[in-house]
Image (cartoon, rainbow, N blue to C red; front, top):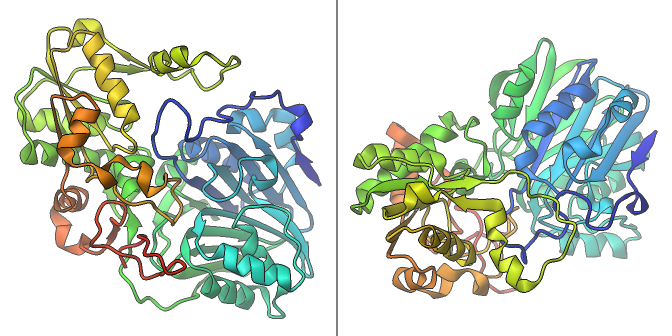
Amino acid sequence: MSHEVTPQTLWTGDYYNEGSGKDGLFDKLKEECGVFGVYGHPDAASLSYYGLHALQHRGEESAGMCVSDREEFHYHRGMGLVKEVFDKDMMASLTGDISIGHVRYSTSGDSKLTNAQPLVFKYRDGDLAVATNGNIVNAPQIRRELEEGGSIFQTTSDTEVIAHLIARSPKDLVSAAKDAFNRIVGGYAFLIMTNDRLLVASDPHGLRPLTMGKLGEAYIFASETCALETIGAELIRDIEPGELLILDKDGLHEDRFEEKKHRKSLCAMEYIYFARPDSDMNGSNQHAARKRMGSRMAIESFVDADIVTGVPDSSISAAIGYAEQTGIPYEMGLIKNKYTGRTFIQPSQELREQGVKMKLSAVRRVVEGQRVVMIDDSIVRGTTSRRIVNLLRDAGAVEVHVRITSPPFKNPCFYGIDTPDRRELIASSKSVEEICREINADSLAFLSPEGLITAIAGNNADDYKGGLCLACFDNDYPTHLDFNGEEKFGCSC
């Protein structure tokens, strides 16, 4: 039984962030996707709903869920937020004890309903559903080969490639999945469901986060530990690079599709920006790691000022760390309006430029007449930083010193983050001094790669060297791939 929101049921421009992509007011990176899986719980759909809600920050374009009662799939997908896509009646129809769910921001494929996940298919052994976080960088090549062999694709999402590879294989499901994973290249976390089985896999370098927990006798899988906490599940461990878990009527089977050859290279942006501050990754709490980033930033680039403020929400923890290290008071100089997702009018360009004030407000009584240290997590194009600096100046700040708790973002990512072309990345062509002038700041400093590693690792920095993907920041981390003869940057393996 399937349920889908058709385009005709949607108001034009009515779902949460339709069209809020690269031309929006804010040039923040998009939070990839989030996956959530349940095996062996009679309330799988409800658990998935709350789990996806906890992962909403990882994708706000679409949401979906597929549930199996071991005989039949029940699924629903729609554009918008989890709370918009699923209502009480819909949830009542999603019966079964196995479930996979997904929240999406499009890193590959268009932002439209056909690409919403989980993707659901019929194949020779029954039903197949697939959900992933990440990106398959060689998907276009594999897709061309499959189409030449007669495959008909229903979406533009690279995730569909894995389903075709499995469906076309004469081998059993597990062997077919192993072969498929060995053909694809990228950074990914996969949940693959049949009528009575669940497969869980992480890419050979562990670029994308995926954790396992337990709730009673049921197994739970989630992109972040905050989703496990939300439903009261106990964290067991992270899924290892190259690992393949099989869950069926006989329980949990631990397997691998590739022998462990590399150290884990989790995307550094998970620590800097993507993950919720209450999530843990590799044993490190995100709030604590971000506080250490702010503290390290203060050690590397102190500036005398009156107050420290963070750009909400992802930079608050780092701003607290900077303030504690320097002794400069932390103040709420910027306030985020959380209710600006929907817009039913198309304002003039002049009003669009002023539209930053709809989402962020400077607290005049806090910043007026003050020398302000503004902490942010990254600079992509520079447009957002300039708008926020000017917002603080308009509110009466006499000096604005910008401190970024990541290295300069120089290289596009091809492993699951939606990043602009290198020519659009301001740090790829401008020096720190030039960027400082561009964003109208009194001074600007970025956290060093060494400082970032030290902050994330805490007292275990030596164990983290090579254990993070820093390729978007540093040209010393070239990918092991060659894309059509043009050198790109990807993972730090």
